[in-house]
Length: 109
Length: 148
Image (tube, rainbow over all chains, first blue to last red; front, top):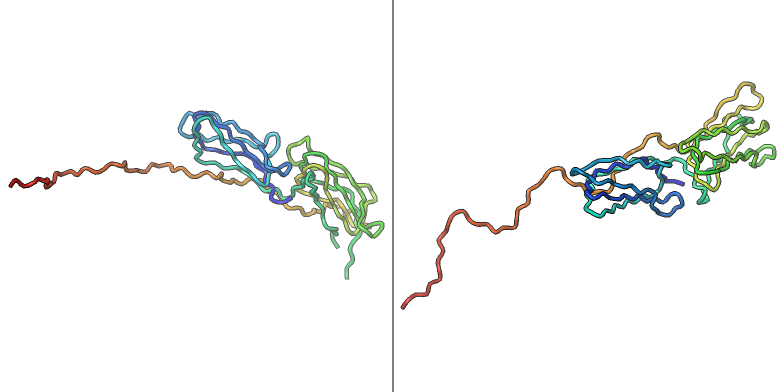
């Protein structure tokens, strides 16, 4: 399967005096988009706060697609954010009938 | 004119991270001159959350000019590396590792920005919607009817 990414962590700069919930949905495992991580953003004190949230517990978050959603009982201002990721070279999703197979290889002359 | 060597295979090493049991299958074209299954073994690294090396010892009689590897199963696997320990048949002490190419996964991570519209750090001025009052007074002709 191609185009699979692993997501390591999320860094967010935000203002949320009532706190907020940050949901991340991906399409793996299983192939359908679903909520894989729910992050509680604590109520901010100052104008803007920057926090980093790990996404590798219990295992790295994975997906070909990713979607974000923020909800709160109060106002939220998102100033900036980025997610650290890397593209998996060889990903085999056996549940989707995927397999890895080489050509017949000769090791040398 | 050259001929392909006959290889004796001893071990396969995977650098892999699985979500559950998967199966490695090895095929060679000997002894029937046709690519056929010679060895198949399950492996599972689900107890670890990182990539781990899996060493698979092969029976002593696995040989062939060609070899083919397959990984399948009902779970997910991230394959980071594969190599085979082999030697040309008939040459003593020529054992060495041969790397089987897989699409590589980088060690590090890159940063991707979230789709957030920027909020400027500085402030800009916005005029209030007030009708201007001139600083100086001016003459105004009043509409007075003439007395006859």
